[in-house]
Image 1 (spheres, rainbow, N blue to C red):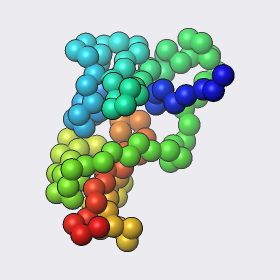
Image 2 (tube, rainbow, N blue to C red):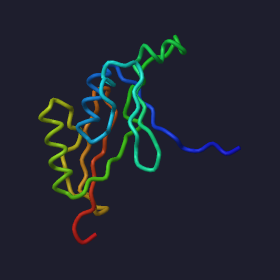
Image 3 (cartoon, one colour):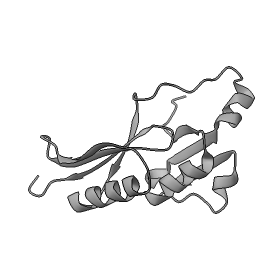
Image 4 (cartoon, rainbow, N blue to C red):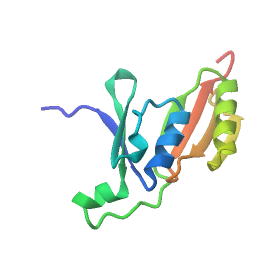
Length: 131
């Protein structure tokens, strides 16, 4: 048996805020997901983004505690450098923490980092013209 990559799971302290954040980025959570203890959005290639409330995780792991963050991120490919800038500005204007403002990285991408409502990094990037 060989395990296969199937999903990315995140723990949400506020499901409604997390669903709203990821919906702004184009994730298709079903209607009513913001009121559920577990929610899933399909991703390209058959993968899924899973959100579980802290209460759900504690229902099977009572000693669970949130991590301190900063060790992982989700990277989202944008269609253009302008889309990186627009997505970053939209999320920051909606009150989300902008960790790194959009910049032209030495590796040939427009790059920015925002945090979801639980402090998880969300990297926004697009190839720079000519790269």
